[in-house]
Image: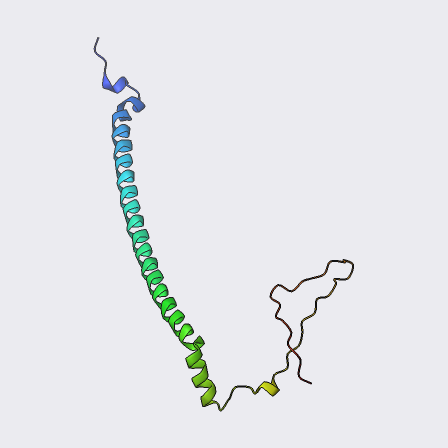
Length: 125
């Protein structure tokens, strides 16, 4: 005897429709996820490009400042600036050389030795 559709359960009748709906939702969700992922990749690429441009600019500025610092530290530039201020080299009688002595640490008998010692000339009196 042939089965009558009216006697079938509602879940059996809507089964294929639910499967199709689930499949459509899965495809739509995948498409939205793909578009979102491509958008994120584009934004991150843009950020990387901006950071690389900033790094290049900072390296250029750093080189420029390094050249400026070396110019300011040059002997010729320092002498010119000192002459503009009216400064002259110190006379030998104006220089007082003090000997550096080593000392013992309290509680420890080890002495500290000077690593870059200069020989002490005759001190002016």
